[in-house]
Structure formats: C-alpha cells, structure tokens
Amino acid sequence: MNEKSTLLVTVTGHDRPGISARLLSTLSVFPVTVVDLEQVVLAGRLVLGAVLEVDERVAPGVSPTRVFEEVRGALDKTAIDLDMEVGYGEGNGRVNAVGPGRLHVTVLADPLRPGALGALTSCVARAGANIDRIERLSSYPVTSVEMEISGGNADQLRAELAMEASTQGVDVAVQSSGLHRRGKHLIVMDVDSTLIQGEVIELLAAHAGCADEVARVTEEAMRGELDFEESLRRRVALLKGLDASAIQRVCEEIQLTPGARTLIRTLRRLGYACGIVSGGFTQITDVLVERLGLDYAAANTLEIVDGKLTGELVGPVVDRKGKATTLERFAEEAGVPLEQTVAVGDGANDLDMLQVAGLGVAFNAKPVVRQQADTSVNVPYLDTIAFILGITREEIEAADLHGQTEPFSIV
Image (tube, rainbow, N blue to C red):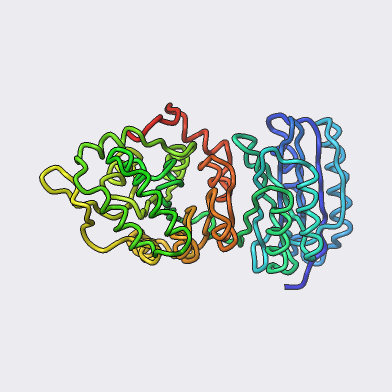
C-alpha cells in the first residue's frame, strides 16, 4: 500500500476524566482513521499523541490538506474549551506497528540516575535506532523503565547496551517485540541462592556436624577439580546417618529470597506456569511446591532408610544438562514454546538451562553466568524479574490485594 499523508496531533494538559473521549469524539465527524495512538499521564499531566490518516474509502479523492485543515480548526476549538494545548506535525505512518527489528529494552537500577539513562539512550542513537516510547514500570523496590525501540542494528544495540549497563552499574534486558511477549509463558527457577537464600546441603551439613568437610568439597568443585555429580555425591555421602527429622528443621530455617512469593503469585495470576528445578533435594522442593503453589518441580532425592539418610541418592542426578532437559520437558507438558520460556539461575550449573530458554536471567550470579545469560539482575529482589517481563508495579500490587508480606520461612 502506498504511504498516505498523515497528521500528528499532540495534546497536553491537566488530566481529568473524559478528556480522551471528548477529543476522539471531535475527530469522529471527519473522514480520518487513527493509525497510531499513545497516551501517558505523568504527575497528573496528560500527553496524548495520535497519527491520523485520511480514509479514502469514505472520502475518495478528497484532498488530505483540506481535511487536516478542518481537523485542526475543530481540535483548536475543543482544546480551548478543555483548557488544553494542541500541536501538529507530520505523522510517520504506523510508527508503533510491531515488526522485525523492534525491541523492548528494560532498564533496572536503584537509583536510576539521569546520566546512566542518558548513556543508554546514546547507545540507541549510535546503533541507528529510534526510541518510540518510554514507560515507567516501577519505582519500588527498584526503578525500572521500558523503552520501545525500532530500527537500527539489533546485534550492535544489544552489545553496546550490555557494555554500557556494566559501566553504569544498571541492569538491562533486551527482548524482541511480538505477540509472544504477552502469550502464555513458563518460568523455571533454580532453587538454592535463587528462589531461596543459601544452600540446603550446607544447612543439612551443619546439622550433621560436617559443614567444614562439605565446604571443602564445594570449593574443589568451584575450582573445576570435580564435576557437579561427583561433587554432589561426595557431599551427600558426608550426610550418612543424619536423622531424617533434620530435613524438617532445615525447612524451618530456609528463607525465601525477598520478592519470591510476590513474583510467583503475580505470574500465576497473569497466566504463567511456574516451576523449579534444583540440584538440591525433592524433600525440600516438595515443600516449596505445596507452599508456593508451583506447577512443576524436579530435583534429586535423598535416600532415607529407617528414618536416617544413607548418604546416597535415589535415581539419576539432576545436573547442568539435566536442568536444561527438565525445562524442555516442563515446556512440553505446559504446551509452551521454548521461545516463551524464562529460566532464572545463579550458577554454572544453570547455564544450559539459561541458554535453552527463550529468556535466560542470571540472578545475582557469578561473572561467568552473567556473561552468558541473556540478561542479569543484580539486586536482591526476585520480583524485579517481573519488570523484565514487562509487568508493572501496579499489576504486581493488584496480585497482592489479599494480604501477605513475605513469609520468614517456607513452612
């Protein structure tokens, strides 16, 4: 279709009920269509922008110039009546149409300083892209804004934003636009040091009196001297003879990461499926599933005989590869395409899962994980992941209407 002449109308002034309806009603008598519309309210002040196009089906052969002159005259009069200001410019077609190359860029910081935001927007300009819209998503517990970007070199933009975000000490997520962003999603989270604070095996080791020995094995694994499965089996062996009642005591000691319950409650209300996958133990994840209302869970199982831990595991080990395979299985069961899955983790054991998911989020993660994940969050609030998904603070608060601060423990 050939591009038609368009008119950009911008209206600003004190916001109050009925403003938009009155302005659009004024336009309704003219042979025009609205090809783009955006409205925001900032500190009680309304800014409304509309791109108008002459509808040749209603008025074939009519001069756009003549129509727009009449439109301007009518809007000028309405603006005076409403004590608003109106401005005009040349529209640019369907500027908000979603298509290839459009991106959502989410910025999180505490605090978000103008200099940091300015540096990021400069990256957009250098990549030859345009910021079509900026919207605040939250001011608590962190400030987050979302920018809708069009044009430019997407790969260059991603790389430059990642580098600048590191320099400025902010978190930035870059995602493609499209209907899938608001479609059904599945989020799968790691457990230790992600959904919960700390490591379960260390808490069990403290009850078994072998905390130092477990820590030494963990350090060997961190140095790359042991793979995950060997490390896990050696640490579990040190728990041999521990009374199974210690698991209940550990459940009472575990604390959820701040924002964990809020994130899950919000996502479930918005139709997300929620799961966890852990290199830890089903004896803990089963409790989390019950308390948090999770849809899926997978973990390793401690063998218990005659009320005591045997120091062995039951069944195959959920390791780095197993986490990725589990995410794929959860997605299939939920009927969610992989590109609409979100994985969250903090350690190298989560890397395969983060890379398989449509969006991999490194949460307060080790440097190697931050470098390879799609995006990273480096604040101690798990619910900030909702902002990366385009969910506003207002939507989160709507899910919180029925109570509840974060629980001290999972039981």
